[in-house]
Amino acid sequence: MNAQSDLTILGGGLAGLSLALQCRQQLPQASITVLEKRQHPVPEAAFKVGESTVEVAAHYFGKVLGFRQHILDDQLPKLGLRFFFPSGDNSRIEDRLELGGKRYAPCPSYQLDRGRFENFLADTCLERGITFRDQATVQEIDIRKRGTHRVQFEADGERQTVNSRWVVDASGRRAFLKRQLNMQMPSSHIANAAWFRFSRHIKIDEWSQDGDWQQGHADKTARWYSTNHLMGKGYWVWMIPLASGSTSMGIVAAEEFHSLSDFNSMEKAVRWLEKHEPQCAEQVKANLDNVQDFRAIKHYATECRQVFSRHRWGITGEAGFFHDPFYSPGSDFIAFSNTFLTDLIRRDLTGRGFRIRAFSYDRIFKRFYYGTKTAYQDQYRMFGNPTVMPVKILWDYMVYWSITGFIFMQDRMCQQTMYLRNLSRLSQLGKVNHFMQAFFRQWHAATDGVPVQGNVDISQIPLVRESNQRLLDDMNDRTYHQRFAANLQQLETLGCEIVEQSGLNVSVPFGRTTSSMVRANSFESVFASVTGRDRQAQMAPAG
Ligand SMILES: Cc1cc2nc3c(=O)[nH]c(=O)nc-3n(C[C@H](O)[C@H](O)[C@H](O)COP(=O)(O)OP(=O)(O)OC[C@H]3O[C@@H](n4cnc5c(N)ncnc54)[C@H](O)[C@@H]3O)c2cc1C
Image 1 (cartoon, protein in one colour):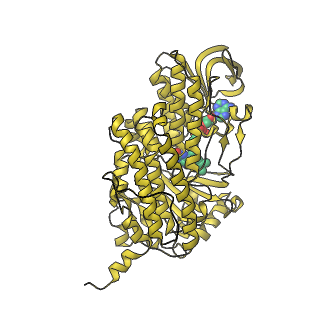
Image 2 (spheres, rainbow, N blue to C red):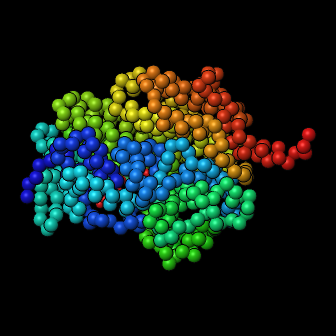
């Protein structure tokens, strides 16, 4: 059988299905084919990782694609990211420094059961006239510089062909085009992960009976609605609740500190947890009968020379790049690449120029990727440092909300003039962030091993709440560019304050600003917590 399509997507996972739907929105007449080798519906819960979303992905799935109602009805709200830093032998959760919010942030984020979500996306594809073929295994792709590309796949026991103007690889780690076109690149970020799911909710709120610790977290603001991170030197452990009633749990570690061979089976993972995270190990042991799956992945970071081409092919999702699951950015990068691809395909199919854009979008996407990577690369060493890490995490949030999050949520991703106008700002933002990431390593070296306890409620930090809220503002071009300039000034001012508060003698290659759009001393309360100043103040005799 020979078929024709304007767009053929190889792989119907999160990236492929959402790209098909985004293209359908913009191109109601286009013929779109998605080829997926698995049988649908796929099982809920024990299926894939990529369950925790942050602001960009939540905005993409909820608002851009318009699936907010499905998410509200059939998925879970997320009480942000929450982190617990080491204290002693980690046997008392209430003694660990905690960073997280007691209230939901203005910008929503969600926990997605991937099986449930992919079933919903595939059904929606069918409803919207997209040819979604499950149990269709792609075998061969012939990419042509002129004319249509040819995709051969196996379905219903026979070999079939689809000729397509555009081909997008969304095959995840199978990475058809990356392999075929020899575009693999080794990543310098060497880390591994293992994950498993339990068929019941594991609630971190039940790990301590301490009344003070439990205060402020009731009903929908219980801690288990967060993506909870148990942090330690070179590693973190995630706990994510799913709407299907399961809990996703994973161990992620930089190879330099923890070898994958120490936690690459359920038995070894339990032993590893007993050593590093005993309270978590107790929960796992009590739930061994409820384990739904187990998987481990070595060197998960993956890179690619090119993702968009003027020869009408593209790559999205894990088939191209993936750096690190800390901060849950995987789906954000799906939102970025799908948005760029949709624009390229729409331009081509409506007779507008797309070739030069394919080149520049490819460069912009990679700059975003490498810019974000600096938050992880060589930073796992400080993951267990309760002095530096809370500040670094908030810094990383601010960078995200000032650059990629800001651009995407303000719908400026495909505006080339916006990049040209802000070129020097983007370059300076990159330099400031690079400097700060190096500074955090220095600060870590000076404070490694210093114990800190307490609680940083980020919903009480005005700058954090305002910056998150601002992502939702409706901005015209003038206010957008003013805000972009203010974002840079805010980061420079914050950078100066962080270095100053650290007490290290480091000279900063940028200055602070006193403008009405910039908040000064905004992390005061965080410094008070991580340096123990707030407890000293509480303990000091009155008067
Ligand atoms: C440890 C870890 C934790 C993560 N946690 C998060 C997180 O919390 N939040 C987040 O946003 N991201 C997270 N990610 C990233 C997230 O998993 C990915 O961004 C996402 O799953 C990628 O989706 P995808 O559609 O590209 O790939 P997939 O979901 O793997 O989809 C690829 C599809 O292609 C199909 N396919 C493969 N070969 C063929 C073939 N020959 N023919 C037809 N179809 C084929 C497969 O069946 C599959 O359905 C995490 C990643 C890792 C490694």
